[in-house]
Length: 372
Ligand SMILES: Cc1cc2nc3c(=O)[nH]c(=O)nc-3n(C[C@H](O)[C@H](O)[C@H](O)COP(=O)(O)OP(=O)(O)OC[C@H]3O[C@@H](n4cnc5c(N)ncnc54)[C@H](O)[C@@H]3O)c2cc1C
Image (cartoon, rainbow, N blue to C red):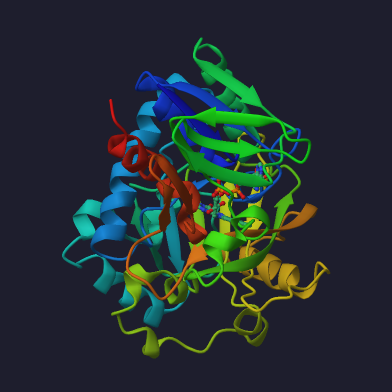
């Protein structure tokens, strides 16, 4: 049976991986010569720690397991490096202690580390902090390797065809199956179809997505020059607890207000050590469209100040800056957006800031719903 996957981002590519492995013939379509959207602009975090209790945590844990398995078959730089959310004040540490005894804390691999224990893991952290919340379930993949690595793996399967430079402008269903066409009328057909457009909600999808509970979110990111020492964990500051739903019922109101610049741009520090010894750092969040077309410098100054305070040393220079958009499900039940367009055809997007994390489990849900 033939499955057409539209979208070369991580959600489309995970559909291709799991569909090929399940024995389907797969044609994988992408509008660009190589994907350029959210999936190559992110941190590469497989971030279990911040997920809301219940279905969101469950899908993240299933995805974490799938990442480990897929990471052993494909060159994607998967590493189960865990994370440290750093408490710079006693009030922050107190909230983390409460997080570490939540009913699902064990599932998340949460553990409280005092300052000496943090430094035993990460001697390079010499700044002002009192301790950290460790999450042993968090992991990371390398965004620069991820999609190419998965496509290299897919290329070893006879039943996989990669079709870049094909921008879908129309979708229709008839008695022979599901069809997409490009502007020149070229048609690709299959009994099964998963359209994974990321934040491209408009165009041929407008008729299906207008009024859907989806929004786009715009973020600023950066990467430093190589750092002289290695880190074995991803690092977050305590501001991250304000944004991740795992912590929403804890005493966040006991925390000092965010720095004005961090509050203005809805910021947290996330820092992910890369295989090339650089750090990916971010991020800001903008929710109102039209988004700013400019990359603003002030948020980077804030990130460098936080890094410097935690490391107790000047933050490494930022070598690259970029921005990106993701699609997020809002105001509706569910962890991501799925809609049937016709028998055998779905659109899947809206994974939000956890779209990379949960992508293999999203794809698994689609493939499990297909006829064998
Ligand atoms: C800056 C940033 C940091 C993030 N950090 C993380 C993180 O660390 N961890 C995490 O879990 N999540 C993170 N996210 C979220 C995550 O990156 C996204 O949820 C995820 O990448 C979305 O994947 P996707 O495949 O749905 O979309 P995309 O990556 O946007 O891919 C969609 C693809 O579909 C193609 N396409 C669209 N329309 C058409 C068409 N008409 N015809 C053909 N092709 C088409 C596009 O060209 C694109 O390649 C972050 C997002 C951003 C922006």
